[in-house]
Amino acid sequence: MFDDYLSWKPYFEIVTMVHGDCVEVAELHSARFSRPWNDGEFSGLLSQSSVFGAVARQTNAFFSKPMGGFVLSREAGGEAEILTVAVSEKFARAGLGWRLMQAAMREAEMRGAETMFLEVDGGNASAVGLYRKLGFKTVAERQAYYTAKDGTKSTALVMRRDLR
Image (cartoon, rainbow, N blue to C red):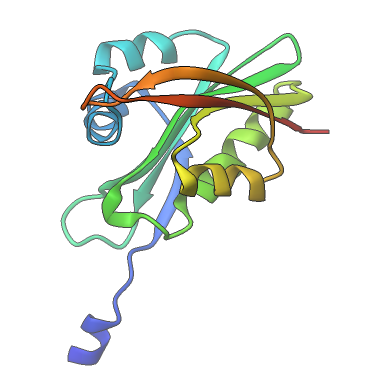
């Protein structure tokens, strides 16, 4: 029995983001980004018909269903973009980023998008690696675009992937 407890792993389901998720989403965003968005900003975006999102909820938690990550996207005119995506540091390297991105790409394609764009800090090697594995290619760079909490600047990579 004790060995089963030690080998316990969290399991997640990817579900549609709803307005009730916005407080938790904003908390996770705040933990992962130097310029966090608040729950009102997430709710406002989610109110737009072109915006959609998904959250990863732990299904085998004992008392609640904690959020492991989220993705927020937009589709318009045959193009989609990832507005923001984050995975809890607690669940990093568990495949949640991959699953959330797959969900966003499927939904974007169902809404008629033929391409998807995203922007990422070029210094975020794990995110850049994930996006490249998903088939995204760098199409532009924005020098000194992001500002870290310590004031340092970094380059934004604009990445693109064909969905069809």
